[in-house]
Image (cartoon, rainbow, N blue to C red; front, side, top):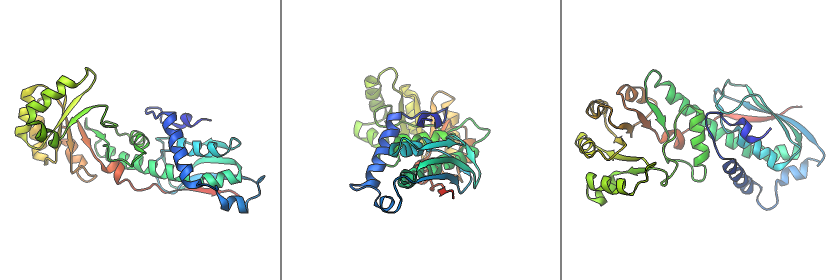
Length: 291
């Protein structure tokens, strides 16, 4: 079994990103001397069997990271996966069965659980948002409000929960915010410069705060999408009417579990929520040694 075999089949994360994240986590945890507790208390030849168990219901993500963590510490560890990423699990459900050198299993435990707990939390929260938009065309998107160094992993977890990814960084799409407009001298000048610079595969999105700004954007014909920032429901509905399907519309600001259903009902195409990644609760899971 390889880490990529546990990936959600409708999403992708580079094996290099998995390896780099696991290496950073183990470097941080093992320090200079390694797991001195396991070294001191567990004889080298001791074997163990353990199960990774979900202690709550939700959507699992991060299993490829858990597997890679275990394999990094011992090539002799064997893992049987009962589910793969993006599976919905019940409280008490076994997720992985692990057997092999006891020292390696105990040393890997916390890092593996950290990955699964963090990413399953993101996936579970995303799935809650998505469930509240059922029956509408709207897609739930994450933002760049991610844990430094873990963006690729957290955005993958959003996909596991049924959400979609906004841009991954500053280099893969042009998103013109209010400060860009202010410095560049207005909506038309900033869009003209963006369009002149952008390659034919680069999308241009611009943020607006008012319907008059939206009208100005529509008059230019230079944007591909518009971010409707902190607009109330009535204003979002009017924005959809004014747009007449010409550009993709994204609602942002004030997007919460309580508000998402009403936002979806306005007819916007997307809603982006930083909460998916910056405020997702940790998913409760454990690694239990079987006697």
